[in-house]
Length: 170
Image (cartoon, rainbow, N blue to C red; front, side, top):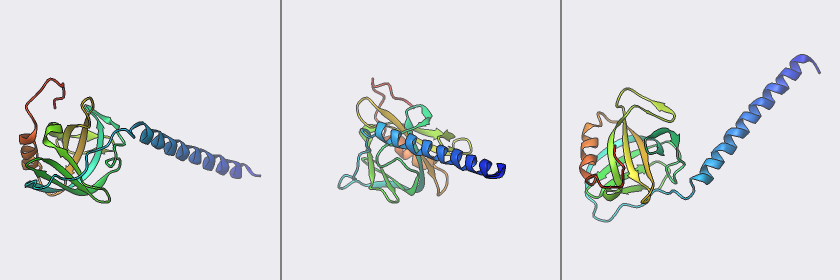
């Protein structure tokens, strides 16, 4: 075996080790976050107030934009539509069931620039802070694909309940 063959074998082994490590880390994250699920299904008679084509980017721990959560079914980036209704936010993402974040679960809505795997122009992302359960607040990041998100953000902010003592603000 020549030195070149040994170098190629070492390179392939290192690449396989890196891929295996990435695979195992993602599986561990899926297991860690298995108890967290997004609410599914839009309530009957929900009136659509605003609708936008979006790129769903990620969901992270609240105020930790680089700590991705593998929240079912929001574990992967996807294109789709976000609809603001009189009862909350519906995320109709390609290949996933419709996620519905009721107005009572919303903790805040604002603009962001950075999240895991994505950096955009200042304020180019919409950050939706919401409660998965009574103790867990998460941030979901959306990139509005069809224009300025100002109206979308305004409509969502109207649905956010008045500040309470749960400590989640944006």
